[in-house]
Image 1 (tube, rainbow, N blue to C red):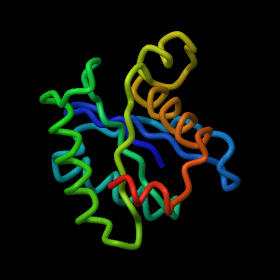
Image 2: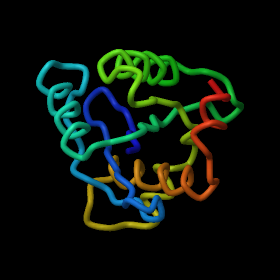
Image 3: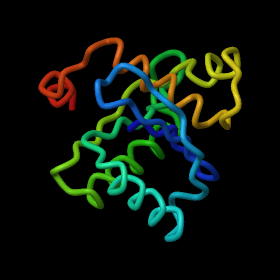
Length: 135
């Protein structure tokens, strides 16, 4: 599962069982609020998610921004909620929204951006061991 975190909406995408194709799902509203967090945790359990990749909005020069710090805090809180059984990792999401806009589609933009993020993550073939080493 990939998440394009935002305070108002969080885009969601899932890969197929083979880890080849990423598909956008409806965005979840306000995951920082109790209702949104419950919806996200329900979806994680329902889809039997094995790993969560959270987009990290690093500045163009590679520096942390307010959004970067917010994404890090969200990922850390999510890790606490799902426990050690489901690794939560951060992945550079620069340009995913632009790529999602260019690609178009019927799904909402945030979830299309999450799908682009997940496709890139899958394409790079990041193994669980290598991803864990990145911190």
